[in-house]
Length: 137
Image 1: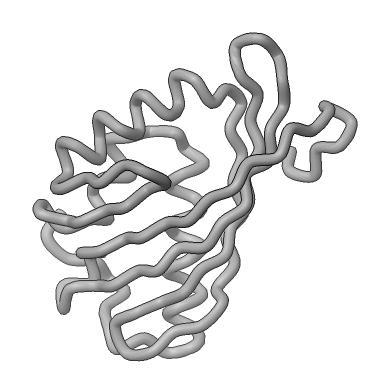
Image 2 (image 1 turned 120 degrees about the vertical axis):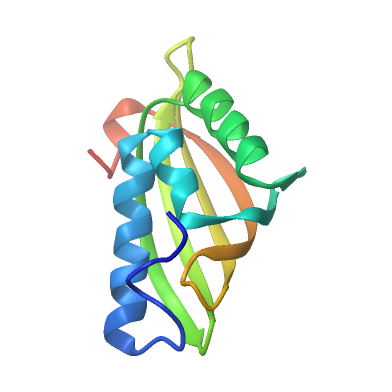
């Protein structure tokens, strides 16, 4: 994929569609699908990891979903301007020991003219929860 059908500058409608498309892709837990939304040289910061390019992103996502079991994500558009978006999210998963977690965070996205994401910066916090506390199923 070299372009996205949703390209900047975004409108309220296309920004919401872009966020929903990202949520759907991440909930697929398919790294090969997810990386197609990013430019080949995309720059990421995820917690304390700094990644460059699709191959590093793909490897990161494989590691992530190998340890974050039954992962489920919800994203919400917080704001946008031209080729940038602010998104809040939360996701839930359990680890191999059966402990459930909820992660909260914010992402800053910047898109290339093609509509592919060229920069993603994520800040994330984790909270241990019980299975009964889950909100995302």
